[in-house]
Image (cartoon, rainbow, N blue to C red):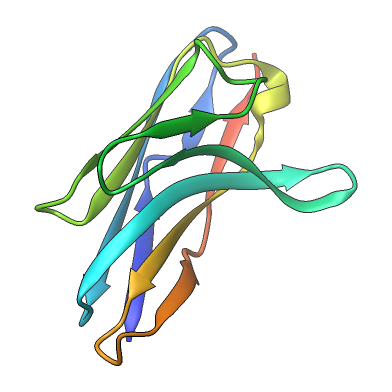
Length: 120
């Protein structure tokens, strides 16, 4: 069983910063892509940012220049540094990881979500 546990959400004023963390635990061979998602109108969830095991990154246009995704492969952890936060960034942020299980099958795993609220 693989689990993703997020932390770091909270209430912040517009223009402020937060850092989200997501740690993977359990038994698995390795982790491929990791990413952060949030709900969006007309979609179940939209990609906020993703990072490959090699460190290549991808960002939604709405967060480019403000958010930075990084990962520590030794700790099986992905981070999302969020700067210059706006009220429209308010959402539950979900961590996702594509995990190579002991069965050598790849499965998409989700965390439970962490609330980010940007408000004065």
